[in-house]
Image (cartoon, rainbow, N blue to C red; front, side):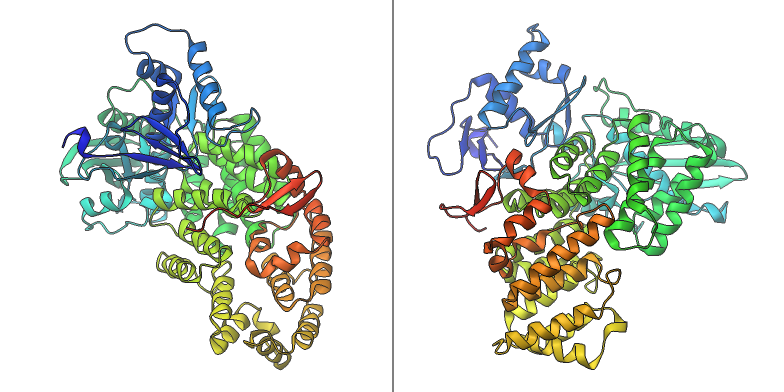
Length: 616
């Protein structure tokens, strides 16, 4: 197929790059944006490789072939592109600088109309590592297969030219009899790495097979055998061998797992496997394992990073753990001092910042995380905790779509898309994505899906379904005849008695202690008060909640509920201005722009005169 037979378009944010006509367009403007030929080459090179760390040497060689130029020429070119895209000096919405290394294009990119059956060089350097099988040997070490595969993902991701699917996506394929060609197509990669681990006494043998995703044939088999105490060196050598088989032309090298104590590393691997499918018991167990690992080796930065993430999970999901947020902050600080190039640590730090209302710093840390790791959880958490909370819904859509594209088997992308379609009032699309999230393993009985299904039933006027779903969102011990009557009042299609329903809801609210009113339940009550038009009760609950969270050092986590259509009256009330200030949202809006559909006039937020972005 000749180049003229295909037209490749790359879309990100409000921009479209036409690779064939070499033009850059922005939404709402028919004329292309003026861009020098070399600047267009640089932009195209980056959007063709979203999320990849592009070294300065690679960019210089690609943009000035056979010509010797100074590094300053590249810096000026990147500055020009940032200016054209409207990126402020303090922002990194599109391009993130990895100090001393290069640049990474971090905006979510969608490609359209690319001819099927063709592969670029970037396509061929894509890999999914499936869980390794474990055979015989030590029963207590049966977790090693998955753990070794998960750590190989981290090691191979350090090679800047190789795009490695995150374990949150590839570990959905645990069936050893699966057709690897279908797996490669689903995960959008060209190569698959499978393997198995065997043990004989104190010796470990790890064998890995690199498989072509199109033909299913083996490209390379690599084996490493070591004493169990030398597992770190085994992993490093195996990653190096597979990395060179994938990309022999690259000058980058596989980094070593920086941990001195073998037992600490084994404890970390056990916790890593538990963290892949978190629940209360697994979170608590992984915290115990990681604390022991850090006690054995205080310089083990990745153990500290994962420990911070587990503490953060306690706060996010209401797992009772004293001082979890402060402990998470301490571990993040220690981890960053030991290793400031770990994307997962920056992601944990960003979530902590969101929980504390430091939205602008969270933005910077999420962008740094994007520059260091391709894990789709970064996009998913950024969407859920930051972009949705600050009301930048178009950007949240892009982040959710990116998470879905990179990890199609993980529920975080589809669950966020379900929530976002709810904010647009697009109920059919929201229901479709919610059901898909359930198919991918997310529980329909836990937030946010439990609330989403309840709200969809209310919007559709399905009375009995809405009653049952709303009852299910309350703790079992709260199920009383009074609660049943209140829920029935709330779910009546005509809402003929809003005053009675609001009074009954207030009675239910007062029946809970402040500690029993967890963040999801507080936000449900806020939403229901707003729907009833009971704004006095809604704001009383909202400000009381902020007082309660302040005593814990947080602002209550994610606030995407504020941007649902049912919350319009709440947002239009003058008291919302003060509420948003207490949430510290104005600091973010002043630096990164107001929420979609609004404009900022000094210290006041107002509905924008121009229409909101077109619905999808």
